[in-house]
Image 1: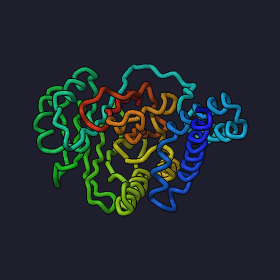
Image 2: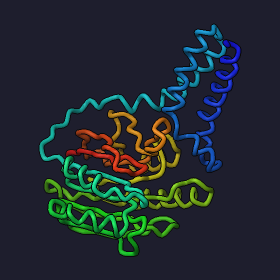
Image 3: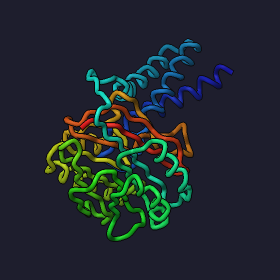
Image 4: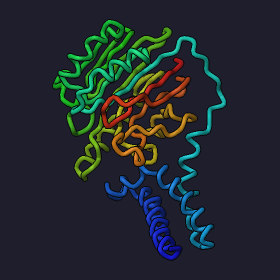
Length: 309
C-alpha cells in the first residue's frame, strides 16, 4: 500500500514542479501559459505531498514537495496580505462585473443579485439582445446605459446610476470586438472606466489575439488621466507574464490585493477555479472591499468591488 502511494506521490510532485516552472515560459508558447494559472492548486497539492512524504519518511521527496510549496506560495500568499491603509465607506462607488455567458438564460438570477447588492455601476459581458431586453427592468435604478454599436453578440453593456460625461466604443486588438471607455464624474473627479473582454487563449491564434488586445489596452490606458480603471474578463490570471506587463507598464493595481485570490472561473469545476475577471485601478483609487457574488448560472462568478475615489 505504501509503495503504491509513494509511486503516485512521486509522479504528482514531478508534475507540480514541471507545471510550476513551465508557466514562466509563457512567452515561448501558448500552451505554457495555460500552466501558469493554477498556482493555488499547485500550492495546495504541495502541502498535501509534503505531509504524505513526511509520513512515509521520504525526506528527499518531502524536500522536493517543499520546493513546490515555496515556488507557488511566494506568488499566492502575498494576495492575502492586507493593505496598511484603512478606508471608510463614505461616498463609496460600488461596481458589479458579470460575464453572464452567452448561452446562459438565467436572467432573473443576475437581476436578483443586482437588487440585493445595489451597485452604482453594472458591467455585463457576453451580453446579447435577449440579455439587454430582460435587464431593462434595472434601468429604474441604473438609468444610464451604454451598449455596443456593432452587435450585441458577445458584447459589453454598462448600466450606471450616474450619467456618462463621455463614452467611446473602441476596437482594440485584432479581434474587432468592441471595448467601452466611459467617463463618469464621481465626487467631483472624472473617472475613466475602460471595460474590455479579450478572446480566451485556448489556441495559438486566440492566444495571439488576446495578447494583441492586452497590448493595445495597455497603450490606450497609459494615455488616460487618473483616476482610471480597467475592468473585465481579461482571460488571464495574475500569474501570466502578459498580465504582469499590463500592470507594470500602466501602474494599475489589482483590487484583489489584500483580499485573496477570489477565483471566478470555471464554476462548473470548482477545484480548478482561477481568477480571470479583474478590476484594476490607478493608485489614487482606494479599495474598501471586493468579493465574488453568488452564481447566476454562468461559468463565471460575478465580481463585486467597492471603491473610494
